[in-house]
Image 1 (cartoon, rainbow, N blue to C red):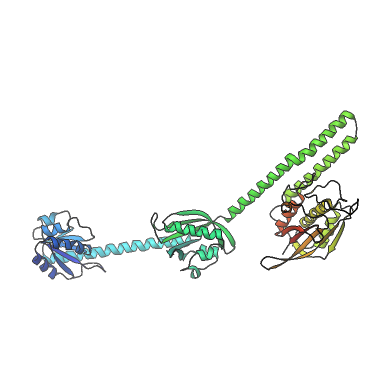
Image 2: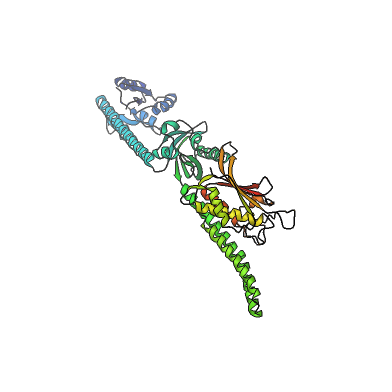
Length: 486
C-alpha cells in the first residue's frame, strides 16, 4: 500500500533478521525491507532512511538502526508485546501488535501527514496573499526583482510604480529596471552599478537616489531589502519613497539663506559707508555752521536711497513672476527708457518681439540693463555709476562720443540644433570687463561706487520667467545682453 502523502511513498522495515523484515515488507505495498545484521547493511540504512516516510522496527536491532539518524520519518514498532523494549522506547511514535494494526497505523500516519501538509500549504498561501496585498497597496512605488547575470530583472511592480514612472507591468516585467528609470548619466549609472554589487552580496540598502519619472527627474529614498541578508542572493524588494518636494524646499531655503547673506553683506558694508559719510558731514556742518557740508551729506543719503531701492528690488525677485501675458518688448523698452536718467544716450529699437511675460517685472529688467549701459558704457554719461560694471567707453575727443543702446529681437541656435527666439540689449561702449563671467553675481562690481545688484536683479527676473540670459561682446565691441525666451 502507498502509506505516504502525495509525492512520498516509502516504508522501510528494519530488523536484525533479514527474513523477518522481508516477510513484513512483502505484506505491505510500497515497503522495502532492510537487514541490519551486519555493518555494511547498517551503513546502507542511512541513505534509505533519508527517503523514508515511516520506519517499521521489529526488534531492538531495528530500533538501534534508526537511533541518532536524521530525517523526517516516523517510527512504528511492530511487536507482539506492547511492553517490549522496542515498544517503550522514546523514539517510537506508534505501536502495532498485529499486521492488521500495522496497516491501520500506517494509513493513519499517512492521512495525518497529508492533513499537516495541506494546513502548511494553506498557511503558505495565506501568507503569500497577505504579502501580495501589502506589496500591491503600499503607497510608494515598489518592485520585486531577481538578479540575472548581474542585472536587476523585474518580477513584479505595484500600481504606484506604474503611475510614478509611467511604465505598465507588461513593459518592465522580465526587463532590467535600471534600463527604464536610471538617468543616462555617468554618475547615476555608476551609482546603480555600486548598488547592484552591494545587493547581490546580501546587503540591506537605504539611500537617496535620482531617478527618471513620468514627470521628469525625481529624488527618492531607495530602500532595498534582499530576501536573505548577509548571504549572496538573487531576489529582493525595492521601495522608492519620493522626496522631490522636500529636496526642492531645501534648495529654496538654501537660496533664501544665500540671499539673506547678500543683504547682510550690503547692509553691513555698503550702507554703513555712506551713513558714516553723511554723519561726518553733518557733524562738520554743526561745528562750522557751513551749510555746504550738508550738500555732501545729502549726496551720501541719496546714495543710501539708491542702495535701499536696489535691495528692495532684489528682495522682491522670487521663484515665480505671477500672471503673464503677451507683451511687446519695443513698448516695454520705450517705457523703461523714460524711467532711466539717460543723459545724451540714444535708444534705437531694431524690430519688435512679443513674449509671454509679466510686464512690470520685464520693464524692471530692461531698466536695470539700460542703467548699466548708460552709467558704465560711456565716459560722457553720469559721473557716479551705481551699478555693476564701469566699462568707460574710449572716445576720440575729450567729451566722448554719444552712446547708443539698441534693443531688438534675436534668434538663437542651441548646441542641439534647436532654434529659439528672444530679444537683446546692446550698446556700443567699451565692452565687458575681464571678469565677464561674474557679471550676474550679486555684489560684483568694478565701479568704486557700484552696488553690484543691477545685473543680479536682471538675472533673477529672467530666471523667474524661465528665460536664459547671457552677456557677450557686441558687433561694435560694446556689451550685448541676450535673453532667450522660447
